Structure formats: structure tokens, C-alpha cells
Amino acid sequence: DGGITQSPKYLFRKEGQNVTLSCEQNLNHDAMYWYRQDPGQGLRLIYYSQIVNDFQKGDIAEGYSVSREKKESFPLTVTSAQKNPTAFYLCASSLNSATNEKLFFGSGTQLSVL
Amino acid sequence: QQQVKQSPQSLIVQKGGISIINCAYENTAFDYFPWYQQFPGKGPALLIAIRPDVSEKKEGRFTISFNKSAKQFSLHIMDSQPGDSATYFCAPNQGGSEKLVFGKGTKLTVNP
Image (cartoon, rainbow over all chains, first blue to last red):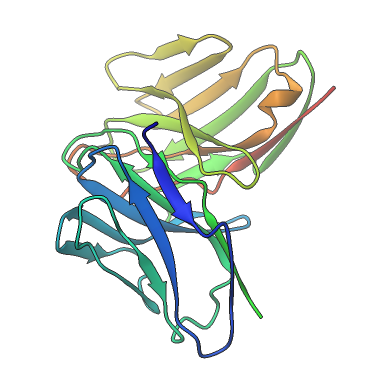
């Protein structure tokens, strides 16, 4: 059953704490993306990666970090520098970014601040 | 910069009615025009998409109409059903571009 798995579904962060959101895909896709969704704001790109060991900042990268050590995995760390982290985080993948291939999304992680 | 304008922000339709959502864009290099559907607590999923070589594409009750000269495309949902209640996003993009630009979404409510 191919797809994108995000975990956890819900996550709570204490002030000053770093938290990591997991994203795994078994679609053999090259490109992976992280989006942040706030009510009424649509989807905003945080980071994207076209190949292993390479990633680029999106529009709102400050306070976030990523890694891409394996093709299947693209974890997102929300650092303590992100002062307003409460949002719905979505991971996505596409076959590659050189074509208009559609995005496949995970089911998201809701992050809240304690 | 606002490259994509989606309207309306919210829409309420009676069961059996027609739902129409519009997306206007600025970048004339865009060559792929998808609509995504998102249910609460879930990730978006591609619903239907069109390329600029055709002006209309129909898949079941869902139709995309594309107007290249006006730089806009729209989603029409015929015979709207309560199960269509969701948020819809347009995301026009350009081949080779890594960064998709999403509209801000339209929350559709179909009353029974």
C-alpha cells in the first residue's frame, strides 16, 4: 500500500523545545516537500528536497530545519526559534520536480504549543 | 507577492446545486492547472487538472474550465453532494519549477 506516512498525528511542544515531525514515503519519489497550513492562509512552503542530501529553503524556512539522508525520509524539526509553531504541517512528494507531476500528501501533523 | 487569487473564500450550496470556484493567476508561464480537495484533518488530494492545450476537462461531476487570455480557471461541481463538503485549492504551476503556489482555499459546504 504505497503512500506517505506522517507521524505523529498530534504533537505538543513546550516553550524552548525542539520537536521533530516524521515523514516517510514508499512511492520512490525523488522530490519531497514540507508545507505549513494555517486557517485561511492556504499552504506555505517551508522546505523542499529534490534529491538525497540536498534541500532548499521555501518561503517560510526560518525556525525550521530538515534533513534528507534517505530517499524515503524527510523529517522536519521545529526549533525553539520558531515563535509561532501552532499549525497543521503537511508533507508531500512528487515523482520529480522537473515535470508537473502531481503532489501526494500525507495526512498531516497538528502541532500545538503547551 | 500574490501570484494566485482564489475566490470565493467560502461557498454554501444546496444539495443538487452547482458549485463554482475560481482561480486567477499572473504568471503566464504556468502550464499545469490542478485543483486539490482537502477534507478536515486530512492532506489535500489531487481532484482534477488541466493543461493549457484544452479549454475544458470533465471527470464525472467535476469540470475544469480554462481561459488562457483571462489567466483564470475554474472548478465546477455539478449536482453537488454533502460528501463534496471540503476545502478546495488551486495550485497552478510551471514545469521545472520546484515551488508550487497554492491559492488560499475555498471552503465548500453542501447542505442536505
